[in-house]
Image (cartoon, rainbow, N blue to C red; front, side, top):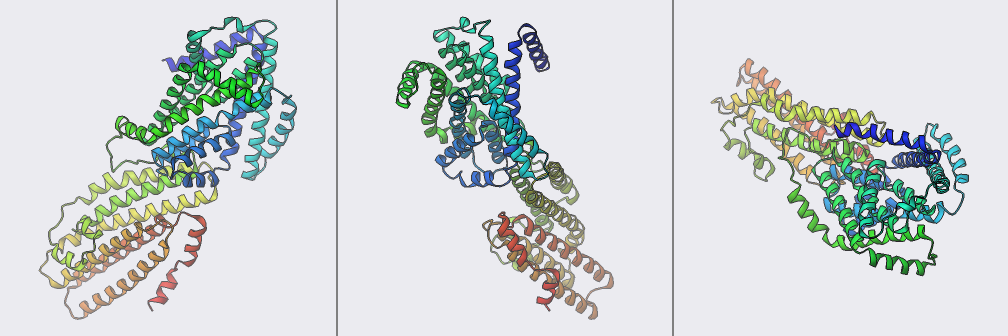
Length: 598
C-alpha cells in the first residue's frame, strides 16, 4: 500500500512546489537533467562493458587490495557507483568472483564516488559549465543516431556529460534566485540533533533520487548559494552515503544469495562509516581544516571543504573496515543463509546476471555444467555403474564385468524432474539475453551453449531408449548378448570418464584437441562394433531379432557418445576468444576423422 502511495505523493509535492515557486521549478528541472545525464552516461559506459571491464574484474579479484583499487578507479572513471555495484553483483551472481573480492570492489567504489563532489565543487561551480554542455549535447545526440555500437556509446557518454553540466547549471541558478526570496539557512539545526536530522534527510533524498551523486550535487549547489549551513551540509553528505545502499539492495533483489550478501555488506559498510562520521565529527572537522589548509583551500570555500570531508570519512571507513573483510564474509555466510540446493532449479540464471553480457554467458556455462552433472548421474545409473567408479582409475572392463546388479532408476521420472526444468530455464534465459542485442562474441557463445544443452538432452533421451534393452541383458545367460551390452557399457563409461578428464583441465588448455581424440576413438569403436555384429550374425551366434535390437542400440550408443563429445567441445573449450578460435581451426571435421581411421 505504501509503495503505491509513494509516487503519487512525490508528484503532489513537486506540483505544489512548482505552484508556489518558479525557482523551485528551475532547481527541480536541473536535478531532472542531472539524473537523466547520469542514466545516459551509464548507457554510454555499458556499451564498452563487453570486454575491458569484465577482463579487469577477472584479473583484479585475486587480492583484496586489487579489488579495492579497481572499485576506486572504475567509479572515478564512470562516476557511477551504481553501475559498478550492478556489474559486481552480476559477476558475483554468475560465480566469476568470490564474496571477499566483491566486498573489496564495493568498499573501493565508496571512496571512488567522492571524486564527484570534487568535480562539482572544484569545477562545476567555478565556471559557466552551461557553455560546455551545448556542444556536448549536439555531438552526443548526433552520434547516438549512428549504427555503430561504439559511436552510440560515445554519443550517450557525451550527451550524458552535457546533461550533467546543464543540470548543475540550472540547480545553481535556481538556488541563487531562491536565496533572494527565502533563506533556507534560517531552518538550520546545530549540534547532534542537527546532525541526526539532516543525516536522515540526506538518506531520504537519496532513496527518492536513487543517486548519491545527484544528492551531493544538490547539497553542494545549495551550500554554494548559502541555503544550508556547512555543518548541515556535512550531515546531508553522510546521509547520502548511507542512502546510496538502497540502490545496491534493489539490485540484489533479483540476484542469487551471493549478490544479496554483497548488498548487506554494502549496507554495513556505509552505516558504520556514517555512524563513525557522526561520532567523530569534531575530529573530522579539524582534519578537514588541516587538509584544506595544506591544499591551499580558502577557509570560507565550504563547497571544496565539503568535498574534503566526504573523502575523509569514506577513507576512514575504508581503512577501518578493510582488515575485517574476511570476518565479514564469515559473518554474512552464517547470517544470510543460502536456501537448500535444488538440482532441478537454476542457481545462476537471474535478472542480475542478465545485466552484463559476460556474466550472462558465464551463468549459462555454470548451469550447463549442473545440467551435465544431472545427465552424468542418469547415464551412470542407466549403465548400473557408480559415478565414483567412472571417475576413478579403475579398469572399466573389470568394473562392468563385476557389476551385475541392476540399479533402480526411473528414467522418465528423473528426466522430468532433473533434466527438463533446468534445460527449459537455460533455453529461456538465453532467448531473453539474446533479445537484448548482445555483442557478437557473447551472442555466439550463448548460441554454442544452447547447442551444448541440446546435445545433453538428446544424449539423455537416447539413453532412455537404450536403457530398456541394456537392463534386460545385464544378467542374461546369453554370453554373446551379455558381451555386446557389456561393450556398450564400457564404451559409454569411457566417454564419461574422458569428458570428466577434460572438465578437470584448465579452461585454456587444448580442450577441442582432446575432444577430437575422443571423437576419433569413437569412430573407430563404432566401426569395430559394426564388424563384430556382422560376424555374430554370420556365425548365427545371435538371432535376427537380437541382431536388430543390437543394431538399434549401437546406434543409440553412438549418438549418445557423439552428443556428449560435441557438448564437451562447447562447454569446456577455452573462454578466451582468440585461443578458442585457434582451437576451432585445429578441430577435425567429419571427413578428416574418416580419413584418419581409414
